[in-house]
Length: 192
Image (cartoon, rainbow, N blue to C red; front, side):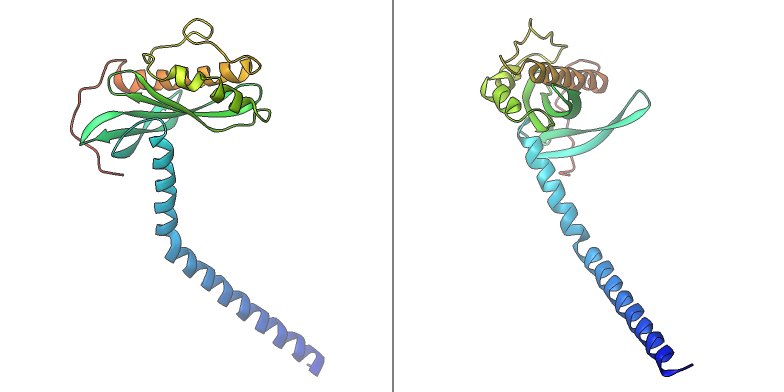
């Protein structure tokens, strides 16, 4: 092997060694930060849940809908069930309208929040400013008829209807979890 071949082989070996050290460093960093990242993600999820349900802690559970697992949260206040938080995706003016709904243990809607959307800019703000989310709070958790039980917001009718449809999906989840009945204030909750 000539000196040019030895240089290429030495350079390749050095690059491979550097790549191995960098990969090990990244793996170590990931291992060290994994629990911190998980804790921050859970903190952010709890902050979102607190927008729609007043609770001390939340516990994640699942239910099966049409053969698919759906995650939801049970909220606890002072060790008793305070209610449930369900997230549903609907279509307003565009697909991908994600709505979080809190339903109290007594069967009333505690709050509704749009957590993400693909709507035309400003439509979700119109709905929020128009009072639709506030109008849903306090309603009984039973299927809501758009235009009868709750009115849409002018110039954002499709977005309003999409939100109501997502809330109705959350109500269907609630009915599946509780049988549609108010939930007895049982002890529980792990603070998760």
